[in-house]
Amino acid sequence: MKPVTFTSDPFRSVGHAWEIQRVSLQDPCRVVDAYTKARDIGSYASYLILLPDYDLGFTILVAGSASLLGSLIGGIVIPAAEAAAGQQAEDVYVGHYQTNADDPAINSSLSLGITQWINNGTDMLAVIVAYALSSSLSTIKPVIRLYPTSLRKQTADGNSPQAFRAVFQDAAVPAVIGSFQQNCVIWGQADQAIFETGLTR
Image (tube, rainbow, N blue to C red; front, side, top):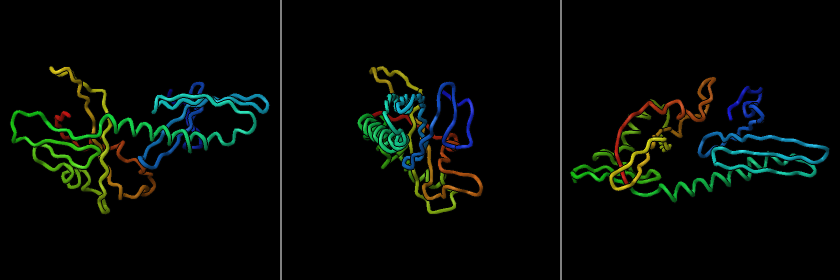
């Protein structure tokens, strides 16, 4: 499921048995890879499409022109899958989290999606603006995203907390800096700011 070679089109690459189309999303800023396989005979065509980001796969059978295929995937299917995934994540994760520390003086809490973040009495949103985004050359508009990791642990009460990684971006920074495109700079900055905390819902 990886490209074997790239093409002159930055949104198209070739894999073993796959034509890989890249669909650019603006909000959130990222790229979705569509693994496709097409076959046709005369005026009839079949398309197999896999979207690993959503655990989604489907087949399209076409009689006649298939010129609307790209619009169908990029304009209808992916936005619908993105909306469904967002709703599922909201149902599972959005809420107020805080530590179960025995010491009542420890004030650590997080409200998703992220409206409040207090760690041991410190306002982390202010820290992010002052520290993680302090090198920005514009008015700071902090964007904070949490990405799940594969780190889990079992607790005595039978729960299985999952670790997340927070990454930060200044939405006010221009997308292009010099000759380098910087649409999603957060991928290169995941380890830039490190802060450990332990929160439970």
